[in-house]
Length: 254
Image (cartoon, rainbow, N blue to C red; front, side, top):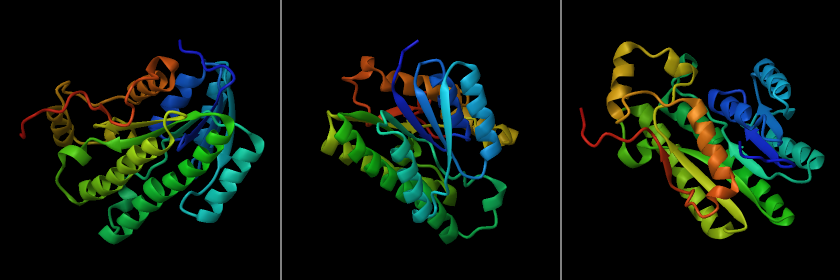
């Protein structure tokens, strides 16, 4: 178990499958865990209680990152209460595969994913980065998509490719600007089985399995393990701005 005693970890989108798995993994590490959520307050409360039951310290902050006003208030509230953020995990993101987006136009979905996954994430990261500079360092995580490099068919893939490609590009340039004082970690994910993946039909699941040399979905807990390593001193010399976590991309189309 890697210890993070005395460290403060801010997880955005903590009520989602990836954010919650990371929170649980940090629960026994000795860190104070700040959990951000928007609509899923009940889930965040359950997660906070679970973290505390595992011996961790947890606090919840509710904010709508689509609103710059709400985002600004969130940043003020967090930094006013906690003078130091050691690790920022940008797990917030919109799931365009959910049914609520099935009737939305391409333009509406484009505005949605860029508003949350790109604009809000960049604004928050720059502000926390400034705080980390003042306090002597830290680590910032971003989550990309391996489809940025390899491609995938369909409008939804175009949207994710554009948004996650923007984040991956931002992360690389941010690393050039603030390293080594602040370590930037960007993880390009493959197919991770969160809530929407659990509802996928057999045909889509088979396509996912064929896309990976491991022939299976990735698990949120596997992302959490990767984050724990990359956040530790053991990964200090690791090039964390281009990490693929996808079970090995299959080299041929099917």
